[in-house]
Image (tube, rainbow, N blue to C red; front, side, top):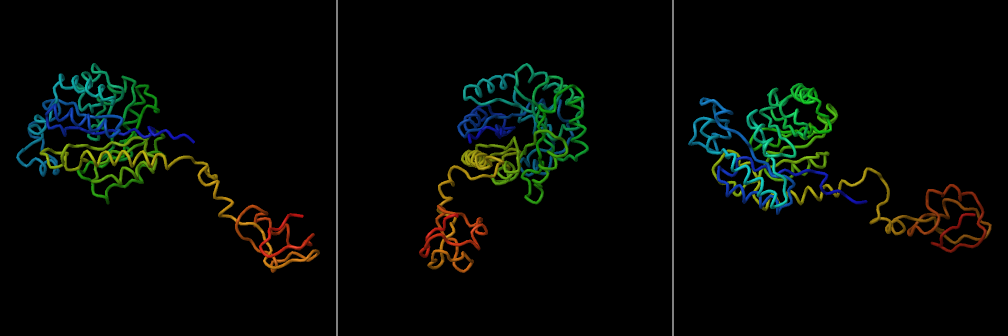
Length: 339
């Protein structure tokens, strides 16, 4: 059976890990492409449109950027200009990897639409932003929604908002997500992936903010069709998201692990595989004589047994032989023939 290794879409979340430096952003695109990711994702926002001057930092943002006092100052340092976006999209095309950026505001949707995205990403914090959802839905392109901090009712409302604008549910993917950076393992709750799939009948994936690669790999085993994971040049760089990101070699190992799990998931049909067919006759058994049997002697449990190889009558047919008379002599270990 031929396996489609691309059945899991892997998004390298660069986010703001470029620290406002377009050269770092370019380097991260190169690394993501070389590792085998399908998509590189940035974040598109104007700090003045996104945050008030008094919006506090999240706890993880304070820890990673202690010199800053509010979100607006943090976001200002991490903005990409419109010109940067065009340069980075073209650079991604050079490396044969899809360019994607999260739209945080209605204004950013207008710009990204002109930029020419193939799909859209809605972050966890905007899942209840009805105007943003409606505007993106009207573009009638595939949409990925992260669901961190939300409950089922909020997710249902978001999906209903999208479909109310005639967006087909087949174009919607929801990502299980936890917005703690990094996410404690006890708060991951990967079983929610199954809950989301059964509740909403849409594609389901996982946006991973844990340390390491094992949780993303497990999410694939649970049926995630999209994996999103942060990538950084160096976890020790200043900035809010670096600590919960993978460095280049780790990201390469993540993709290798996901592709291997995709192969291992394989078929839902339980049958002997091509690689094990050669072992059937070696590992299974045939009915043989456990002692010398004379012509005319009755076959009994005392004079029959089963032993390898499985080139004769299989043991599950033992009751078709018991009680019948032997039509010839059988030596010990000689395979019994069906009469």
